Amino acid sequence: MAELNFEPEASIEYHSLSRANADDVPAIQNMIRAAYSKYIDRIGKEPAPMKTNYDELIKTQLVYVLQNDESREVVGAIVLRHDPVAESLHINNLVVAPAAQRRGYGRVLMGCAEDVARAYQCTSLQLYTNIKMYENLVLYPKMGFIETERKTEDGYERVYFRRELAGSKC
Image 1 (cartoon, one colour):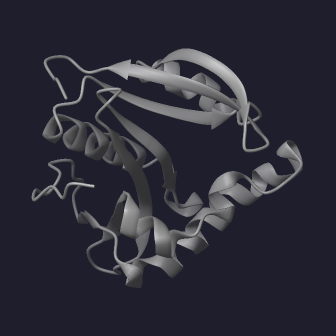
Image 2 (spheres, helix red, strand yellow):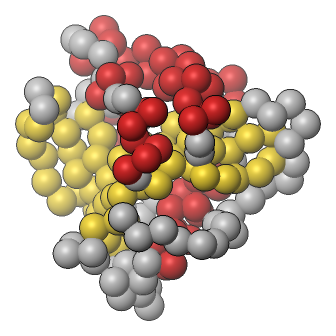
Image 3 (cartoon, one colour):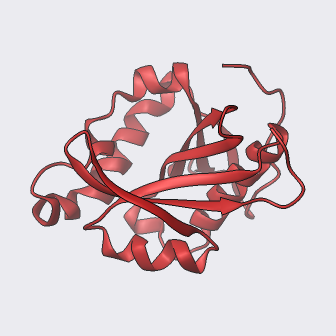
């Protein structure tokens, strides 16, 4: 994957957004477990993000963390993958720590995705969610995403979304 040498513009007061490194993996894993454990009963198994090897992921994809500048606590993370064939940036995971939710951090992380997509000159953002994560099925259309398909993949029922970005081209 080509390396981009830029810092995303998205920010929030007293917080910093940066590329994740190996030192961030334990905090990312703890945050994922805390945020996604509520879905285990609903889905009938651990959601895919809980099974992901983040040590490997930070080597192969674009992973950013949002940290509190004072405490250095990781309050959010986003995993991105550039797809030049589809002229799109895939948001593979966007997570905010449960204790930090409803403070605008999700918007900051989505802004990061938009910045990265523009840097790659992509025409769209794509993401998916589990069909049983009902909250996301309501949230993503409010953010301008349009449902494109539903399918079972890797044993999970997923709903795919896409949002076009104005003035970009991969």
